[in-house]
Length: 332
Image 1 (cartoon, rainbow, N blue to C red):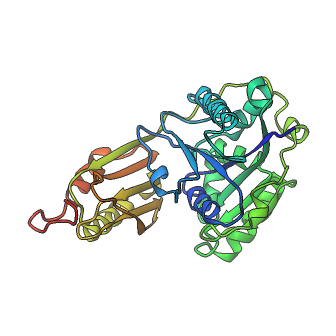
Image 2: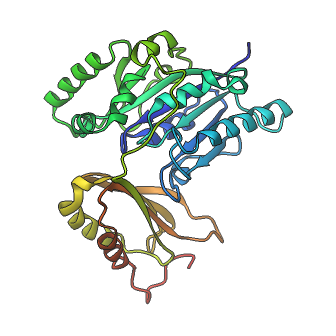
Image 3: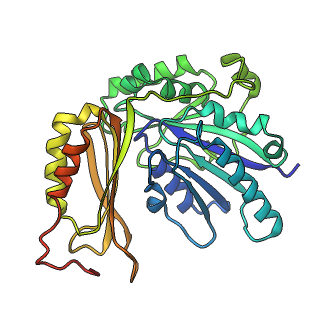
């Protein structure tokens, strides 16, 4: 039927979805992939973290969560992608949808069965769920979305096993197997996973899903807890990386449990590449990102997602990280 296969890549905040997606985009697998990125908040940065070339189409959706407020946008974007493919202006043979970490995959998967225009052109190949071994126990206890992400999974990839206690990993695998015995479970360290565990699985089983949620095809309502919010810090002046590490390190000691996810693409004084800074609760780290292009406007963007976020404390602290302006940054 020449249906376009779609992989829904889901997983709770900080589970490693973008890292895995980068791995897929860099792999020499011969697939031409269109990517739909969904982020929660007024601005997104994951699009800047993805490795791109001229043959890839990456669409960003950051005006809400894909499973509720922007579901109509998902239908529209899938329709536009198909129209461009048919016209020969865009070449791809599959789609990967990366959801926000707070997404319930049910309404996303539902789109491929209840919307006629989508079901005529697309096939839901699989829901692939990333699980953070370090924080999964607490996330599964506290968040309905994390449970749904496991329940709807056709493949489960466990990340961060290198920073979790071995006995905790064993206990987690037993729990996941009990929650979803039909999903194959594998490990993915630093985005390293077999492509065969991600693409062309043909794993989505509607009958199995209807056993979990009998109203899957009729119930479209979904809401998030109001106490989970996000905010963005922006700064056009170059920052000092050591100050950021020190100040955020101190903040994490106090507010770590509230900081569910934080990630930034930063302009650092004296560095011609973006610095990517990411964290989940008490774990954080930085790495080199893509180089700044000549003439490109350089700006640091830091996104925080969490409960009862100390916005003023974080904002004031990050403002103290502006580098000494007497030492010019490259390109500024």
